[in-house]
Length: 326
Ligand SMILES: Cc1cc2nc3c(=O)[nH]c(=O)nc-3n(C[C@H](O)[C@H](O)[C@H](O)COP(=O)(O)OP(=O)(O)OC[C@H]3O[C@@H](n4cnc5c(N)ncnc54)[C@H](O)[C@@H]3O)c2cc1C
Ligand code: SF4
Image 1: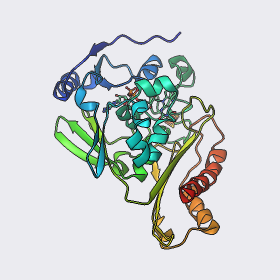
Image 2: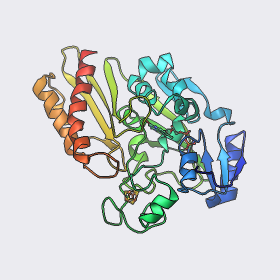
Image 3: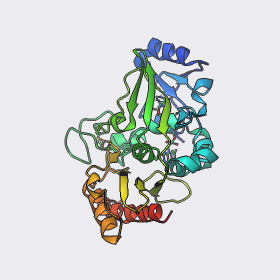
Image 4: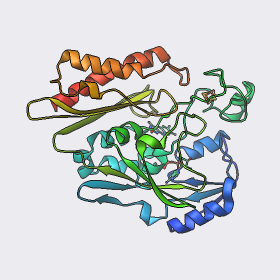
């Protein structure tokens, strides 16, 4: 049986108090929301904080706000609540679908949007017990100095959060507070390609909310996820597509994001060239191939990387077709 290392649990009731506690305990402290990722990782001794600052008693993090032209989703909202919200299902279907596909019912009840956004990257050589990792000489991301996947000095553990692809195609914005005050960052700038820590959060900062503009009339979006077990599992590959057609059926907006392959969720570049055309089989094929080109196969998850990559165009085509048929 894996045991949790000892720690002190602090339960602030306001954001100000949480920030103060994080600043006071510095590198000894970590924020915890639902704990569905952090606690298993602590059992594996991937993190050994002396202090956990719980975010669950802070009402300001729990609101789902309809701002008229946008949604403001509190970082502390449970995934299941967001996935089952009728307004979000109607307005941001790809996000609702993605959050409804995270883990199993317990994870969606406990796990939060903020925790999902800040989910630690995953790797076959990292998400293991201390003894397993020790037997292999550890790795660059934790306790070691070599990467067993890429061989070099760069960690390529996979971004595995299901919220990232839809938040990218919806061009969402992250609201952040920290010792230096409040700031915002588009989700497309929130991640960087370093598997050791793939977000641009600074020490002591917290995600407060996600702001997502309501898509313009006629926008269609969808999410898809490849996983071993349909009932409960991390993604081996996940992706989202958003598109808009004008009244003549011409493609006037298109974005696609593919993740769970590398450390940074990938917002596919170069899709503007497909705008101005009426989608047919050839165009769908061309878009799918473009999405495949940006996907690098890595042995960071316990599945054939070439197969994962080969599935990118297959699922992108299905997503495009779903959007076009909607
Ligand atoms: C068996 C299993 C299956 C899973 N399947 C999936 C899956 O299919 N898809 C998926 O995406 N995830 C999956 N997860 C991971 C996890 O359940 C979810 O990602 C969940 O959303 C994490 O949220 P949380 O609130 O529990 O995060 P926590 O575990 O509390 O925190 C995760 C990380 O985020 C940080 N954090 C939390 N909130 C904030 C905040 N507001 N500001 C700054 N940092 C913060 C924490 O310090 C920690 O580093 C799975 C987990 C397990 C154990
Ligand atoms: S990608 Fe390399 S450094 Fe990163 S967790 Fe995996 S083995 Fe470790």
